[in-house]
Amino acid sequence: MKETVRVLIPEDKVDERIAQLGAQISQDYVGRQVHLIGILKGSIFFICELAKRITVPVTMDFMSVSSYGSGTKSSGVVKLIKDLDEPINGKEVVVVEDIIDSGRTLSYLLKNLSDRHPASIRLCTLLDKPERREVDVEVDYQGFRIPDEFVVGYGLDYDQRYRNLPYIGVLSLTEE
Ligand code: IMP
Ligand code: MG
Image (cartoon, rainbow, N blue to C red; front, top):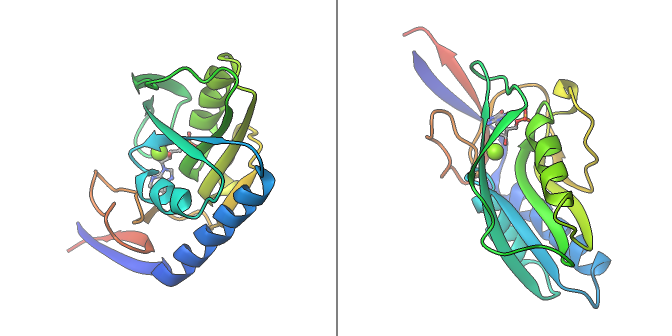
C-alpha cells in the first residue's frame, strides 16, 4: 500500500490555536496551579506547546494506556501501561489528549482519575471527531473539530510513524 498525507491543518494554524487554548487555560486558572496529565504518546507534541503557553504555575505527569480493539476501533477495554508518577488528590487536573474518537479511552481514564480525588478535573484535546462518538465525554478545551478521517502528525501516528510531522494531515492508503 502506498501512503500519502494531505495537509488538513497547517503548522501555523495548529500553533496559533494552541496559543489560544493556553491563554484560555491561564485565564481560567488564575491564582491556581494546573497539573497537566499527558496521555502518551499521542499528546506529547501538544502538551509541550500548550504548557509553554500557560502563564500560571504548571506541573506535569504522564500516563500510558492501550485500548484493546479490532483494527482502528477501540473497544473501551483499556489497559494501563504506565501509571502516573505522583498522586493527584487535591490537584487541579487537566487531562491532555491528542484526539477523541469513540470517547471510550477518555471515559475510562476520566473515571479512573476521578476516583483519585483531584480538586477538579478537566479535559483538553487537540482534535475531536464528534461524529464518531459512542460514549459521551465532556470536552472543556478543544483545539479543532475534524471530520471522520484518519489523521496523523503532531503526535498522532499510523503504525507508530508520522508523529513528528509538524502539521495535521489526512492519511490515505492506495494500492501501488
Ligand atoms: P477512542 O477511545 O476511540 O476515543 O480512541 C482515541 C484514541 O485512538 C486516540 O488517543 C488515538 O490514539 C487513536 N485515534 C483515534 N483516531 C485517530 C486518528 O485519526 N489518527 C490517529 N490515531 C487516532
Ligand atoms: Mg492517544
